[in-house]
Image (cartoon, rainbow, N blue to C red; front, side, top):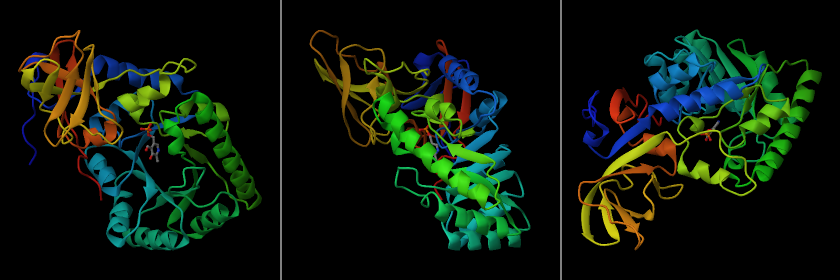
Length: 373
Ligand SMILES: Cc1ncc(COP(=O)(O)O)c(C=O)c1O
């Protein structure tokens, strides 16, 4: 059973127990509205829910026009469907009998789709779905440059699409063409050029699919780093951006160069922490280490406190260094941190504390916390 939440609705933000995962609701709502406004006619948003793992946030994204969400794991999708989400794509490969059976059963409870990059996996998927008596939409994932999952574009992808189309239990839904590494290329020109190559791969594969008599209704991909390029491509029609909803410190570094477009999105996710030791000038220790804030994409940024940097993390301690010209924070002071990477930070917490101004307005569970299988 999860611990009780670190705050109560109506409390002052100063009374939140820490470390706590806090959403600035005004910034968060603006991020959802901004992304909804950026999606042109003919393109759909299927927001990535691995960012937030929350049915409540999925519902808010869908109320603003998203057609559904993506999940990365079957258990993540199951948790969100149990909590009321009606349309989920597992934007990943699902391998192994336990997972395939759970996925096939889930397809009886919601609209579900999945990605494949292997013929044997299609055979196993088809058998699981037939035995569950459900149907499943399947996208062929092509490797457009990330060199993670995905079959080679062109004929190898068409061969898999044909296998799917020939299975009674499965429906060929299109291509998954997500370029993961391009999301964090630091200049817009680099990101744009990576997506140009991805678009060429998709176009080549689509041409061959048409020649083979196979429709390709969906071309899916894009994240918070590249979505504007997929929108401009004329090829992608389903976008999977996720982090835009919270905007972490690492994504902010994409948009900090002189020639960079300013990010359309604001920091909306924070880990609020408390100074637990302040023994000398220029040095303080927080109660938020890497069990409260992920450090895989760098240390968190200290929010709105000039001359103060987070410089070291152990399990339950975070070290601050403070420049000479600035005050060292005192014992008990709250320090707001912008996580380097929002997704794994969220997975460390049971609850979101939603704040508006200086009041706690909502407490939401992180429904799919720990759903990694
Ligand atoms: C398959 C897939 N689609 C989309 C995304 C985009 O997410 P974000 O906008 O958080 O970068 C990811 C992130 O890793 C992903 O793995």
